[in-house]
Image 1 (cartoon, rainbow, N blue to C red):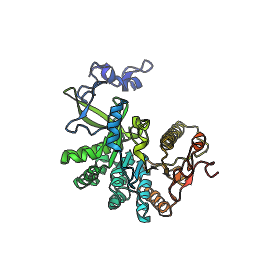
Image 2 (image 1 turned 60 degrees about the vertical axis):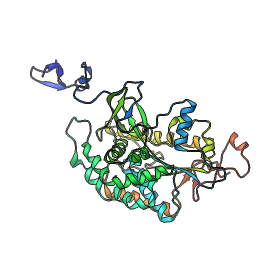
Image 3 (image 1 turned 135 degrees about the vertical axis):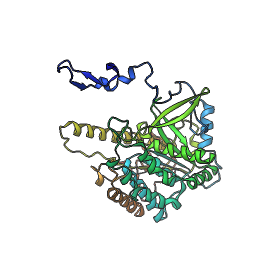
Image 4 (image 1 turned 90 degrees about the vertical axis):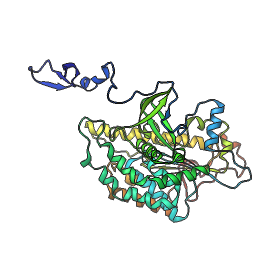
Length: 426
């Protein structure tokens, strides 16, 4: 190998024969004429419209044009009868790694309490993506959901005994996360999701496309409707991609077509783009969406601790980096909730939020230890059964919106909900 192709540089301050690792050397493969050669297919051109090979139309690609927005709205929230009594509930499940045990406990607790809503749309990001299919399919799948978080599978498959080789693309081997998802996503699940999709319900999962630096929204019901082994594989791949924390797991490569050419896209954790979502961004601001959301209610399960936890940060590098990353994540989650609250306020939709109690602050959510996950799960299930799991960012509109509210027209909070707005109780 030529000297300038190595990730080792000769130090001018060291005797001949001695060398040191340089930061520049580690990234030198990007300087060559074809850095992708032998590693992956190139990503689609920037302005090309790419479809997954064999599965056209399974991603929501929404433009700002009025016709495109209407088509997307028809797909997600079709216009319903004015005299109907059916509710239109949306459930958004956030990321949070091992904190996903909280979301699982909330859902099973609601089932046991007899207060689990039927959801027209279920969205998931990261660990929320792994919960989403079972949340979408309902209480009959609670045993599989519980087994996924408390059965010891994550503790075994994501243990430090399964580390990837040094200087690879991730800490854990790629097959670890694949093996975690595979036994829980089978043909029976695909058939069940397809059946619910045919009724007009929607299951949406977000991944982050690192190549174009955008979120991809996948319609898993559309994938399931295709049926067969290839649908099972793509369904699994999307879930794995959405839960692929960069650096912790290797990215998932998705093969696509654009302009008659084969390409690959590199997808990672959906939380890189957004920790949770209600629907594609373009629809959130569409002025004609509100009429489709009559009798709607939004539920958000945040699989992490939201509240700040003031304490003295140690001056070491690791402590500062870890604390900074944690702070960044909490700001990100609170910002996403603020966007959800704004959407609900504009459309007069009640918003109910559940998040991990502050008692669990300080737990490392990247350590998939079954006893810790069981503790989080049990706490969530108890709160849900006691009707104490939901909070509401604003039980009543304030400011100018409240001046034009008809008496009695305010959205009703979820029973048992408490307000996060100190002025909401008058």
